Image (cartoon, rainbow, N blue to C red; front, top):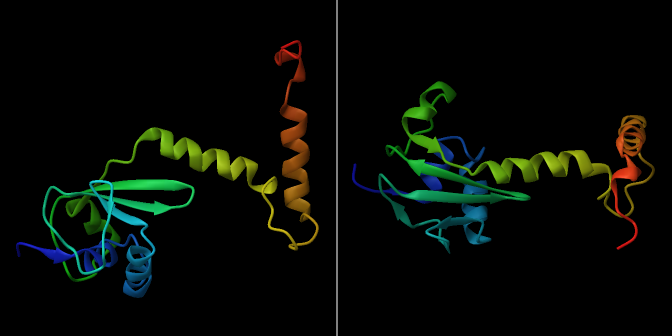
Length: 134
């Protein structure tokens, strides 16, 4: 097998739960090869680096082998290598921490857990560290 469609491969290596979701991500420009958005029918080869944007993070995967069939999670490392830069994971952590700050309009009051997280975050800040004279 020399080439495989990108949407099939993304589904096969469990990056997306369904092939339909993989196709939609490609159509929305969230899947890139060499920083160029690709169509779902684009063929990939071994050695390509595929970037998948799942806001706020852009994951990068190196293609090690090709497959059109969905596989068990234990077999995935044989087909791809996660080469996502560490700074992307820092973005993910920051978004988890600040998730309560960026609430959607109209979602109502914070839940008890969100309120506790907000209070814990506010109490953990040390305002003496900031230089307010600038």
